[in-house]
Length: 341
Image 1 (spheres, rainbow, N blue to C red):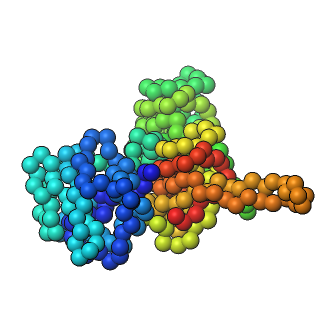
Image 2: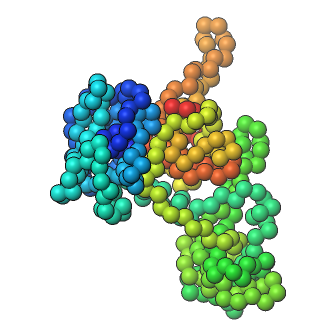
Image 3: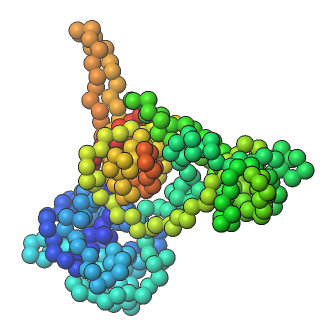
């Protein structure tokens, strides 16, 4: 079973445990980190509920990013005052980290990521949720391509109409995708803006802007909308944990369009920042129990919901969020429920 973040359980790099941790029955006594590992993979070797690591691990304030581990590092399970700890022996002659380690200088880019970043990179860099219909409708839009072309691509000049910020050098080009509404309340939750490309603003005259397409994922068409590009750093050091407040939501979409959801698929949830969700929150996924007919009494009876997986929230918006399925014991689907683990 694959579970959450053991590397962040490095009490060996500082602090004293505040609570007992539940180890897996078949946990190893030590593990050598290899290229391709993720912290989620490694933690599943040691812990039953590893997202509870904050209760027993406290970062040494003298160390920057003490939770990062690298290929070649050796994790050793030891017991201090009756409580399990992980000691970290640095590979490649980097030394051994004990209770009071020194700052490392190994590049962060080499560190083992928490989760497989290739599964979410496009959602971190390009996908976008627009919170209101007014914001989408008020954005500048592609008016025409050069020489009145209907479609344009990378390297082409295009013309757009709207209010431009001359201080912005580049805009993202997006096309209206799915409009999300809450399946339970009917509330508008947001518009999924599909990434079309990036354009450089060359000049403006009145409300007409001239732009050069510098990147495209598909053909640019009149009506596509322009939004200021967002600066987003790829975060490979998510810190999985249980949400601080009760969460009860639904999977309402699978952006990649699959019908059967499995491990490392991205899903859209009908809960967001306003509901207390934060990046790193781990949620349990429950298959919604079917309603069946009792052949003895003739009644319609609902079968209990069944826990079938775990996901981690990796990006939040006001009313929506994206989550990555990290564990699935059976196929999941839209309208499955998510709750505190």
